[in-house]
Image (cartoon, rainbow, N blue to C red):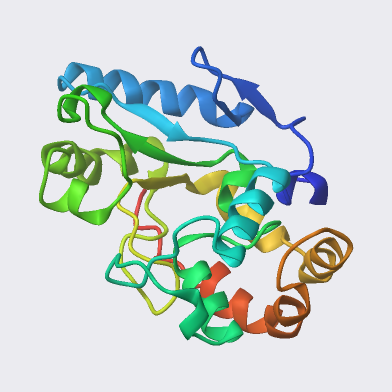
Length: 225
């Protein structure tokens, strides 16, 4: 995968699903098989978020860094960013949101899953852990746990390892994502952050080795076949 694909700057590696969501062209067959299996189990498996461009990830990042979007702590409680240091803010954002240029969503191999038929009436998807471990997506989540490995998928953020938060909704297509992670070039990421309008860029570039170690490469091990 070329560096522009790895960092979300182009869409040449992607294909569009019926609902308009983009995913990696080589993932479509196994994702469709997973979706069909879910339907046979009476689940309406859908992607809430597929490919995310560098521009889109930058907007998410800047909105959180500036306080336009709510920033949550590890217990999913709102943080008053005026009361924390710049480094603490950086770490708090990275707990929930990837640094632009390093998001696994750039690759088209990773997506956030849900079942819209299981949402409460007039309810809106929040992508909170409690939705998948206690509430309306519990059985759907259990089905994913039992079946995604059969189709080449796994959860890189199955458990919290002092980096990215646990994300039961986030699945990854291991055969391609594993190669993409190995190909990610930190020097290019550094240059990309530096030349674009990314808030906190000086601190980011200074902390990039730590960010890579703690929030990019620090993922759960694939246990599939």
